[in-house]
Every structure is written in structure tokens, then in C-alpha cells.
Image 1: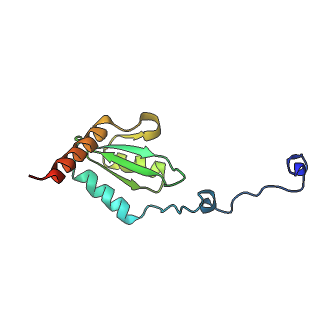
Image 2: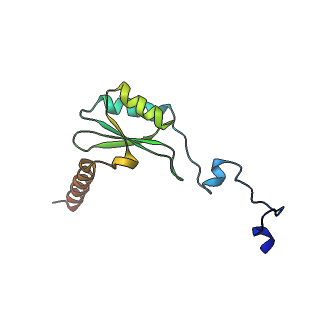
Length: 125
């Protein structure tokens, strides 16, 4: 057993064969044309949009979070961090690294309003 930890031991730990092996049983779905089309139409139909680029994690690929002036938001997978920033530049949308700046308060406020509206709607007359 202790031979494993000695230098020069012939037994070596191998690296996982692929990204799927590193993430366990989770398969990370890549972005596709449907994701990109959704982002394009969403940003075109709203005003005051900002983009927040979220880095790859063990469970998801790089994502782009778009937040409108009122806090309405959408999130989709994108091919890469640079693609996300280029997308925002094409649509003249400011983009930020979500890991550095976080997500805007207006998004959390929007989620709270939607939750409250849903709760009021379920209570009925």
C-alpha cells in the first residue's frame, strides 16, 4: 500500500479519458443553433439588456445570462466565453464576467415579484 506514495513507484494514477469522465455521470450538453437563436430574438425584443458570462462548471458548459431593464432574464449555453462577449458586442449589449461582478439585484427582484404573483394567483378568489 505505501509503495503507491513513494517516488519512482511504477504504479501511476491515470487521468480520466475524457471530460465526461471528469464530470461523473453528468453529460454536459453543448450549445446549439436553437440556443443561439433564442438569445438573438430575446435581446432584440427587450431594452436595457446586459449580458453576464458564466464560466463552465462540472454540470454545465459556458452560459450567457441576459438580463433586461426590468430584471426579466434568460440563460442559455454558448460555445465559449469569447463567443458570448462577441455576441453581446454585436448586439451592443454590455457584457460582464458573472464570476467577478455577480448577477444584478434587479434579476433577484424580478424573481421575487414573479414568485409573489404566482403565490397570489394560486390563492384564488
